[in-house]
Image (cartoon, rainbow, N blue to C red; front, side, top):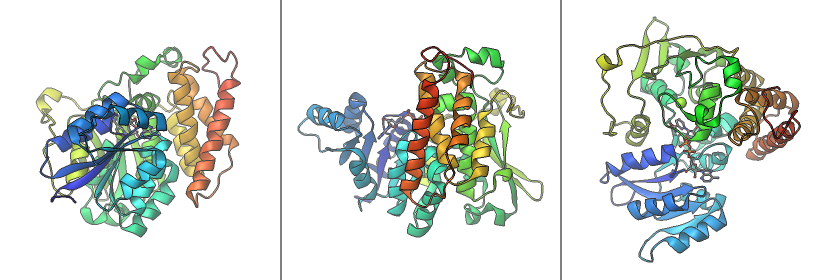
Length: 404
Ligand code: NAD
Ligand code: MG
């Protein structure tokens, strides 16, 4: 705390979640201060954010980006520029920091999220990949340090809101029989497999309801996002995978539900705007104005539901297989997916080639007990290497293929 305000370090500040987080913080200048901002390489956006929020620190992933930001900040700006993992570690562990928004995309977010949890901070978890990869380590760190882990992913935030406060980490003790994860179905919900073979990155990133970064947008189109969220729900709420059902709900108004033994189903509803779960995490246990338009149910008119089609969207099945295999299989699944999504966004493989990469790599990498961060990181590295080789060896590489 500084001057009675909670100090927040926003990791991934230039991304979709980061920008929404700063929007909510800016609405409550009396309650929150920005201690640090961190991003990969977006120097212009970071410079603007430093001028607007005057953080104590700004962290850039690469030295060159850090140098360039230093050169471009005016002399009277109080922000000190740090670099890389050491910089991230500092801004999540400093004594003045209360809350860390973990919104770096992908596996790159794991070390800083883990460090924040080990330091006993309130961790607002958007970076689902860190829980998918290192769930065992992250949950143990939370238990040992007394950190508070609040889910920002809209589905998990909804589940958290629908659970009694006394049982948010052990719903099995509170009469919960299932959680129902809602999925929009993504932009290809009604597309045939043949049409998806020719899908472009722009089509995959054109989500019908949410505006998000490109990686999670592709994951939403393939339903791997729901697969990662299934694993995320198992770790966050200490549930077996068969206690998590996926329900396709194209309007994205119900953000998820909890089903109780007595037949009750509690749901959290709202417009699809990430500022709602972000404000809930920032303000918890109080509610804050998030700047989100009130839900108009009459204008919404319909709430539809359908079962996911694992034939057209095999990624959901692959995530279930990874969670069933346990150990480092989830990190391997996540890494292979990250490589496959990057290859798709880069025009190297077809959209429908993504699950083939993951399936092949899951079958090749042995499953280990994820006892340390280095075990998880080496499984991640091995999966990335094999996925890159697999993609390079695909027939017609250089051209696209959906074959796997
Ligand atoms: P994004 O691509 O818009 O932003 C990613 C941010 O991470 C950027 O600021 C980027 O500079 C930063 N970054 C990337 N690599 C980095 C590194 N090595 N070091 C420091 N910073 C780095 O992504 P997003 O959509 O904001 O998603 C962020 C995370 O939140 C993802 O894990 C995603 O799954 C999760 N999430 C996003 C949404 C959403 O609506 N966007 C919803 C739920 C969960
Ligand atoms: Mg989500």
